[in-house]
Length: 92
Image (cartoon, rainbow, N blue to C red; front, side):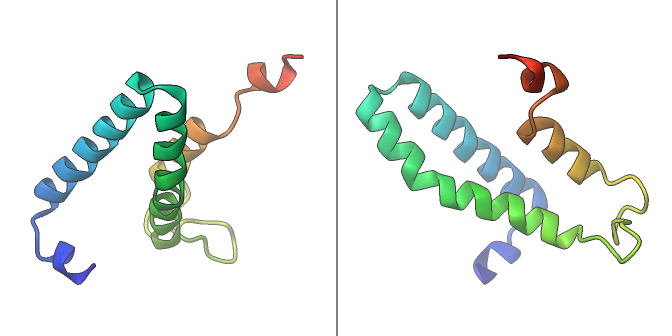
């Protein structure tokens, strides 16, 4: 993990985005058994990545992000992607 810290942020960003793109492409184009194996292999890493981001944007006692203040763009973006919309919640 320390080796990653020596790479420029733009290189890391590119590598993460490329990995995610390959993962999505692999899961979408693979047969069901392969897609399931790939998804099972990656889910823990994906969850750990989200948790690491949220950990660095932890909330203080008043519920304010310690990095962003009252409006945390990371928490909003993660919530928008992961949490069901009102429409999804109301569907049977």
